[in-house]
Image (cartoon, rainbow, N blue to C red):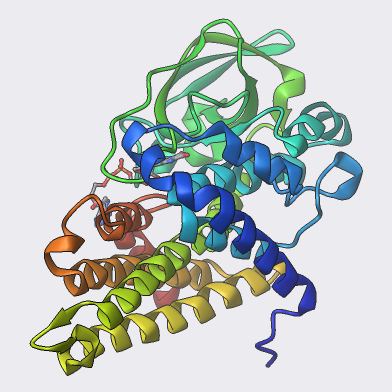
Amino acid sequence: MDFELGSQREMLRQTVRAFAEREVAPRAAAADEAERLPPENFAGLAKLGLMGMALPEDLGGSGLDMLSCTLVVEELARACASTALSLGVHTVLASHFIHRNADDAQRRRFLPAMATGEKIGAWALTEPGAGSDALSLSTRAARDGRAYLLNGRKMFITNGSIADVVVVFAKTKPELGPKGISTFVLERGMPGFAAQPPFKKMGCRASPTCELVLENVRVPEENRLGAEGDGLRQLMEGLNYERTVLSGYPLGVAQAAFECALKYAKERQQFGKPIGQFQLIQEMLADMHTELLAARLMVYRAAAELDAGRLTNTTAAAAKLFAAGMGVRVAMNAVQVLGGYGYMREFPAERYLRDAKLAEIGAGTSQIMKLVIGRELMQ
Ligand SMILES: Cc1cc2nc3c(=O)[nH]c(=O)nc-3n(C[C@H](O)[C@H](O)[C@H](O)COP(=O)(O)OP(=O)(O)OC[C@H]3O[C@@H](n4cnc5c(N)ncnc54)[C@H](O)[C@@H]3O)c2cc1C
């Protein structure tokens, strides 16, 4: 076993960490308050080549593997969870998904502008009536000559209001159930395609989350990814990418929460000494450190297996389940270590807790992760 990330990945981590500490972290609290992603964050990431981090160089990307992309998401989440989520969705869920499932003409059409960040991507599976039970989606794509008419609604879509290119799953043959799902690329400005204003959220507030409305949207055949009925395979694979790479998100949020608690425990004095001298505080810090270590190993291993083409649903689900729960537990402990100040918005601990919670819900809830693992164990 090799536990080294390698010098290139370490260098990447250092570069992203320096950028995130210098440019992203100082804006994070205000972005959360304003519920708006600072445009400078994506502009800076574009300069670093990270808006196209997962795309190959001949399409203008940086050609990073998924383990490296996980590190980027982690380092950004340590500074600003919203920026990490929106970047992860744009790069891995949207543009890399298109790259994996498109033909050459579609790749050349959609991806160079996504690689530079000129165009932003989103990925739309969830519907108002189909969340955990995503395969029961009811968005319909009806054939209309050499095009399709799409009708339906997509719920809680990250980047919905800022996206130019949206991957949408719809049923071309509803009578086939999940096997009748096909995938389409919708573009901003298509008549009948609109984003509702972003939701007001508990956490990750600067990353826009919207409902998308599709009313008789005419989508040319050339915007279908793969064959009709290929959507099920594509989306299941997409979920494994999301569960793995976006597990960098709870790693980064938890790391920030841990560092904040450790620093505070060394500085805050009660009963004549730093509170970090009390063993009950040390217990919390030791638990945080240990869980972070374990989650990081699980997530990096899942990412390495994804890169090696042998990731199983169980490994992805277990990494996601543990990392997401760890994020909430670590952030909760951080609030506790900070005491009353942990509860105040002038300190970042409460934001870390609000941000961490999302990882237990998005990309399949923790209950659904347990069902995925349980089902495979029983097979
Ligand atoms: C901020 C945010 C961003 C998101 N971004 C995107 C995005 O970009 N694209 C996208 O497609 N989706 C996105 N989602 C949607 C997300 O994937 C869903 O919210 C999630 O899958 C849960 O679906 P639901 O909200 O409908 O909850 P429900 O499915 O209604 O679940 C409600 C509760 O019931 C539980 N439950 C459901 N079924 C079972 C069962 N069989 N056994 C036990 N418990 C069960 C769940 O665990 C949960 O606790 C986002 C969500 C959020 C909050």
